[in-house]
Length: 252
Image 1 (cartoon, rainbow, N blue to C red):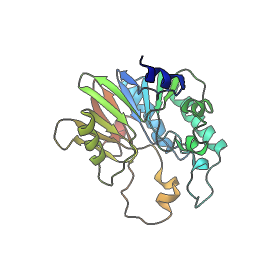
Image 2 (image 1 turned 120 degrees about the horizontal axis):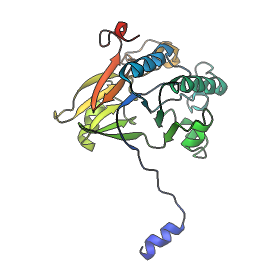
Image 3 (image 1 turned 90 degrees about the horizontal axis):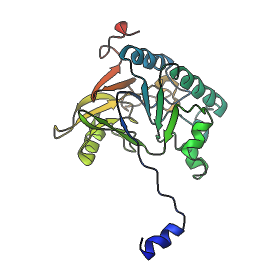
Image 4 (image 1 turned 90 degrees about the vertical axis):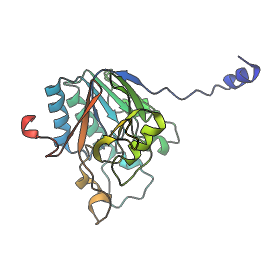
């Protein structure tokens, strides 16, 4: 170690944690936004997991909504933190009846408490408020990579948004040279990136848009939100969404 490197190391500034590199088959959800979750879709996660025999669940950001810690001015009184905490405990307890492993990466809503406390709360502190089950873990990164027979899949909750489905995912595929499964935009879609080299997917959301004030109180030309989630088996994505994309009579 050089003198400069040693001096910097002596300052005790910890490096940011590494993103997860995972393997195997996963059911992947995002934008759960407890307590505004559409609970039918939370049940559907279990139904599909049992049918496809998938024991690993990856929550790709915005498991929490954290309305009480938003820096935006509220239009209506949001649910209390106690209500959100209890909703998070309920859904995790239900999912743990089947899943052997639940992993969570961070989304912009999950980071609200970190911003509210000026970084005093780490992601592990947030998770510990709702569960101490060792099967549930959290990572400070907003993305994870799954190694599959079809190549690397980058599961991400990006900062960017587009009204056009798959646009952000396509740009990320070109940037990272990986297949992309993207959340945050609450879109559902599957296709190829702009150059036809990587598969790109918008994974939908588990939130109920009718419970969100900024969505349902006033008319808007914003894109409609789409419920859904994705299984990734042997590197092949399958989207589960509203009919006719998915025939729920064969699952539920």
